[in-house]
Length: 292
Image 1 (cartoon, helix red, strand yellow):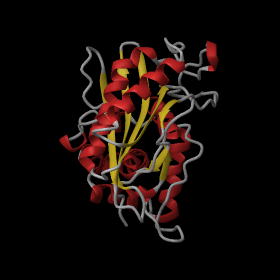
Image 2 (spheres, rainbow, N blue to C red):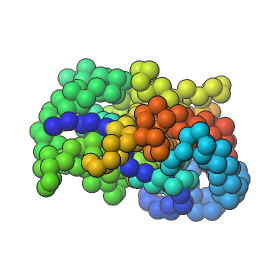
Image 3 (cartoon, rainbow, N blue to C red):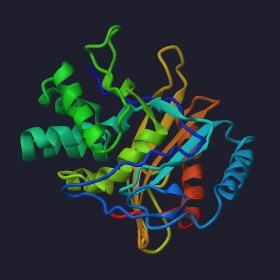
């Protein structure tokens, strides 16, 4: 069994699903205009149509040198309302699923999970992630433990794939919609027992230093986890994705970015995710931020 990386697309349309947040580590609910979700510190500074136009301009400029599909979803931390762009809307999770797997394993065995958690997150080490999966009991026990973390993070739809599926599958093959992943990322800082995984995400190795991993603005930092692998069982082309939490002086954002390059190459995929990530970083002040 392997937690190898993979992806399918996510993209366009604002998804609006507001739910109350309560309990330890919860986000502060705020009544806001335009139906923005709990945890938001304010409405977007510009109309969605203006952001759509800007994103279309970006994808048009990428089309000649980096053709393919891209998508991004952004959610204020503590919120449940992602703002999405692009044609890629869902993808296999690949190594981004190592985030909830690591949290579940740490909750199950405590500090004993940390050495493997560090390898799985900072270096995207697959054997380490497989060890964490086995720590949870394997099969349906592991599925239930990881699903519980996703649901706690307000991802109410993702179904974790595993070796118990018929036909047999793998955790990394889990279809994870960008909108759902951005919601999960937006609740990650607010959940108990996530400080260590976020710290590891803030210090990833060079093989994950792309996308939003290296913000240039003062006071802005990012915690990221990349994932990449064949887009499907019949398509050997690489899909590349990134789960991120971006922290700024204004507040925080949960982000999911994905790319499916026409070339199918990992290098083109990371270049596309980076182009989209840089677009977001340039425009962060146009999106509502949130805090736990």
